[in-house]
Length: 163
Image 1 (cartoon, rainbow, N blue to C red):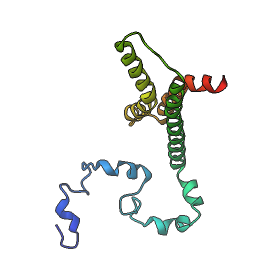
Image 2 (tube, rainbow, N blue to C red; image 1 turned 135 degrees about the vertical axis):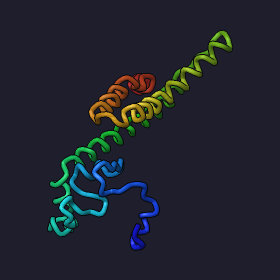
Image 3 (tube, rainbow, N blue to C red; image 1 turned 180 degrees about the vertical axis):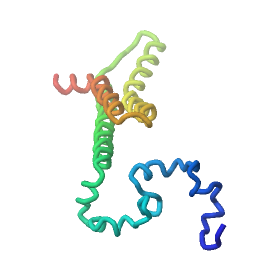
């Protein structure tokens, strides 16, 4: 342990050892760089790529097509999240148009519980899809979110507006 590296106190392994595994470094190793911003040959990325200092980011977009794909998936997930939020508002507004005067208290309680579930169903679908597809393919996540967008349409609101 050298005195010029304060992080040595927090290290449990020898990074130079070929069998050493750092889970946080896997994505960076695939790109050919380490945490310090140097490539495997030990040269600085900024020195190796003259376009790295490009403020427009055009060179960065051309260098990493996976980043564009990741940004597109994130944007699509955000748009579908907004759709699900509008669905919850649509269910709240649509259920105000409907009324049920049940003959028993149990029927009214069950009806109100069904209304509550209809309101939170879109938020539950969104959260569950994000949780269950966290490590999976982005296409599967977007597919499940698109399916939910088709299934959870607030019909009482749509039919009330159209009528």
